[in-house]
Length: 360
Image (cartoon, rainbow, N blue to C red; front, side):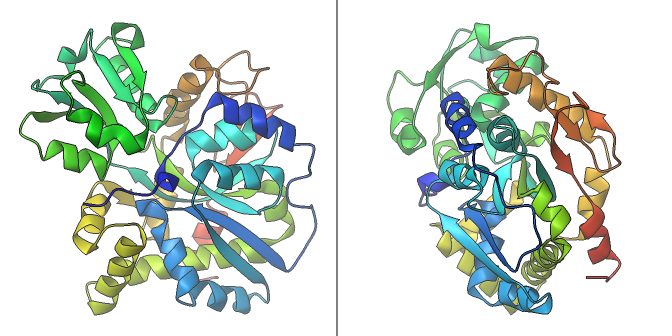
């Protein structure tokens, strides 16, 4: 199976945070009503629908409905997409909840998660060579992309069995080198994601000892938009919400059109229909607005604290952060996790509710 392009990498390196701090001198997305909008996306299983919608007229249909123009732009570099959004060149970007905190929020850009597209439900995996128990990872070198979602999965897995990162040695490894590295005798433990994980696990001596299905809801893949732009341009939010749920309805149907859509998404991401469906099986997609609403208005407070603790412990909340709650996160019900005077990331279900009620 062909691996994703580098753009699939979900990384939130501290160096990137420093870079984005410099960007914040530019006002992100001017605070005014406007007609033209740009949204950045990069290749990942849960974001392929955006590219499909752009290529097949769904984006234009909804933009025309609200008399605006929307361009959904593919980036080959995931981090660069977030950097461009943080700098104000784009009105929205596809990003994980962790990266939204570590890059635009840590850089001072007030952002809103308009939609959670999905969460990882098995796509991120810890693999041991010749061992079937996570506890056997103690004392081993673990190859992974440092300061990435894979690093977070490792930290949370160790926490769950009463261990910590002090019990292992993290070896920073490029995603492009994962499969080749596994074939060497020195590599005995690895944290990676599909489709690379699936290819490695197909080997006789590879065992899945932990995956993100044991961290439900923690690794969210979202549409993040500038908060002021959202406030000034509700038509933009309505159109983006309409685009998503129309595409979700199309690809989740049991018909030839759904198969054709998923085939196109798989091919665009470097795999085929079978490979894409395998990745979907390990991804909790929010096909209906009601599902997204139920999740977002559920126990996000606890999930958020897991993420902010990891980011703080690894110096990814900005150089001025003094605690995991340094950046305030406003939940859909208006409550704030963290510093209420420094709210820089928000969740909303307002437009999803419009979709559920047929009001878009």
